[in-house]
Each structure stands twice: as structure tokens, then as C-alpha cells.
Length: 337
Image 1 (cartoon, rainbow, N blue to C red):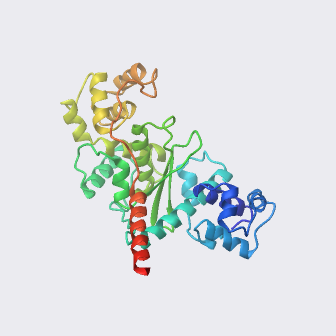
Image 2: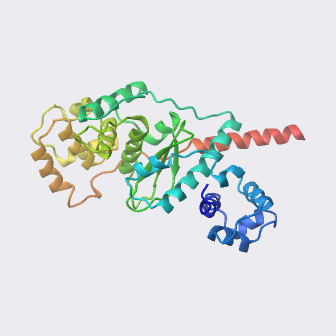
């Protein structure tokens, strides 16, 4: 680990636990003072072995976390999925946050007998073209037994399939990121700030990140990698056959705003993404898509007043694991009486 990473790792671990410097000092049993913690986080000094052990115990984390050897987070993938919009300091902070959270989460799952097991059902699937993305999205729906109708909660589906999701504050121009821990645990980071992401945006972003995790993207393509991830997210949310059935035809000269709002409220996909999908599915022409987008999306990019997906998108697996852990500890306490 680079020497300067320790302050970042300590700072992020303290924040993840919700501790002030005073609280962390208290949790060490007075072994470490608030002033020392402040100096550690500023990089002015480093703790000795006994102080490091006290910090690890107080934060319920392994000593290896501070050395960056507990879980290997794929930093290059974080850099890719943030589209190069994060500084190295920001990347280090997010890597530390993920490393801390994933270690605690996986340890709890193991103790609760509820481990995360992940298998990529479309491993090796390559996406170069729009048609590749349609096939990949349809295949994943088939493998995950989703049918071709609306999916109530994308986040709960991903959690159920073994993908760990962390809610975290991200820079203004980054909505989500994805990576791997120890090359076998898929992680998605989402910013749940309602001022930044609508429910529809959150669902789309989660699936965009899923594409990064599951698919392969050959360099030879007319589309950039991020665009191909967008294709997949859009086509998974609203399959072609379902869209055609909703519209009543595989070719339309016009589509009303009211029709698209109804589809938005049913499938949880934004108007913008859906009208683009209608063009990509060859239901409407590119010219009509441009006119529709110019009339309804450009003046109101957040689609305020134009419907919303009512089903809440939440993450819940960690809560269930915590409840199991609570029951286990209660039973252990009873056995000791």
C-alpha cells in the first residue's frame, strides 16, 4: 500500500461506521486520542502496532484493511466505469470505502450462513452492435426467468442474483460505478440522492453497470463502450416484443406523450430512454425520434410532471443479513446463560 493511502482508509472507515473522531477515540477505550486520530487522517503521523490494532477492533475491520490487502478491488475497472471523471484521490477514497464495506458485509454473510454466490449466466457474451445488445439483454432475462414484462425492482433482482450494491455519494457527474472484489464478488455503487437520480435513472444506471460486469466489449465497434452499456440497460428494461405489444404495432408514424408516460409508469424507464429505444428497435424513424425528443425531452430533461415509476427501488439484503446476525447473537447469549 502506498504510504499516503492510510489516512484515506482510516477516514473512510470512520465515516462508514458513522463515527466522529471523538466517538472513535472512545471506542478504542482511550488508547488513542482524538488529536492522534486527526493527525493520522491528515497524514502527519502513523499509528504504532498497538494503536493500529485498537483502530481495527474499534472499526470492526481486519488490520489488513489498512494495508490494502484484505480484498483486492479492481481499481482500473472503477476508473473505466466512472468514464475517467474521478481524480486519483477520489478513486482511492471509493476503493477504501468499497474495501471496508465489502469485507464487513461478506464476513456477516458467512457468519449468518447466507453467503453471496455469483455466477455470470451470460459469461463470454460479446457486444459490438445494437443487435448484440438486444440478444444479450433477452438472453439474460431468459436465464434469470424474468419473462418479457415489467420488472418491479431491478435492485432487488440484482441483489438476489448475488450482486452487492452499495449506496454512496458520488461526484456530480458520476451516477454509478461497478467493479469486482477479489475477482469473484461483483459490486455496484449507486448514488441514491433524489436531487441527482430519479427512480427511473437509478434503475437504468444499475443495469448500465451490470453490463460492465457481465459483458465483453470488443474494441472493433462503431459504438463507444458506454453507449453499448446503455443499449443493454434500455433493452433489458423494455424488451422489443413487449414494446411492440404495448404500442400495438411494430411500426408507428407517431407516438403520443400519454402513451410513453403509461409505459414509463409500467416499466420504470424514462421517456428519454424509451423514445430512443423506439428508434433503435426501428419502430419509429430517426427523424421522428429527434422531433419527439426536441418537443418533450429537451425543454424538460428531468421529465417533471410527465409521470413517474411508483414502485420504490431499495436495497435490502444487508438488512436481512443483519437481522439474521441479531438472532444468532441472541441465541448464543441464551446458550451461555
